[in-house]
Length: 90
Image (cartoon, rainbow, N blue to C red):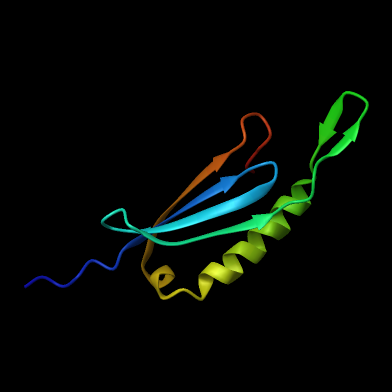
């Protein structure tokens, strides 16, 4: 009998109001979901701005919580999704 596949995958969604995470197993079953809220964006005149630092700090808090989950030891891939036009990876 083959050993069970302990592989896991992490999806991250960077939104305007929160960062969301979903950890799934090889069978696409949800292992754990979590979210880290973000403060409302700054509004000045016709411009809306959200600090990338706030996103980064929220991501650190979210990953710190997920890191303790045993399934993260077998993490194979991470997918990142973001609000259209407001996320730039460097």
